Image (cartoon, rainbow, N blue to C red):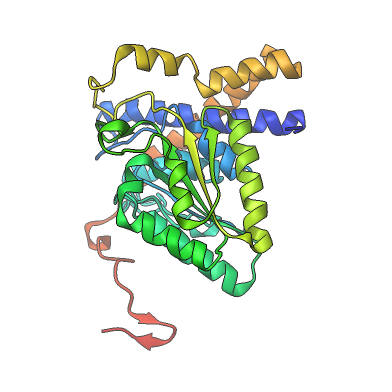
Length: 328
């Protein structure tokens, strides 16, 4: 893929921002500053960045319980995301969503989701709306390999194929459904083969190679916008940490972890920028410095944000009216 240096450095920056954002979040949680669970995306950054870089401004996205990376790759504010994690008033959900349910509809980000596979039918509905309104854009659903055992996955792919909806179904296959290895909950090795049941392309991407992911996503998006229907993309990758922050991942063989850590998507892409594109180490260091400054400012913003008052707890939870009609 022939992308300009500025674009390549942007992909590197976006991946590094996700990595450092989550490393800080884990430290802040250990320090008692962030309540609730964190499900780190560390190790899978190339998938979110590669896909989101292939989307236009009108795209719709649904995410998973591991959604920080998808949201940052879409361009969300790290400051407002930290504020949400801190459970402060200036967070994306005004402290009602936390890590698992952040949303920014202005970015087309229809929400992270604590229900396994819960975002897949939502993206299918968004794809139907894009088709009905003639907007030349796609809906994207990120999900894990475990979600492809859910009925919602099969129902969504069936309807999306039947109606030729502009949807990209992106399976981030990190080999484990929570704590269970893929070969203990699925008979198929490649999730992509399930696309054949619904007469749509099933494409495997190297989920640790941001350029490969970007190329596959771009082709699928072009195909969808041209009216040729959905694609199932399987991005093979690996999470570096446990299912949630605090899970030590003892169920994973050490040699397997070491093998995938050697294929770290950020380190390998940085090395390629140097060896294949003539980028100097000082340029990569400058990007790292920019990311650290961004996160310093984001954390300070979150710490300065006030706690919501108890009487705000039910605000924005229930609607009083819909399109002028009173709700009861």
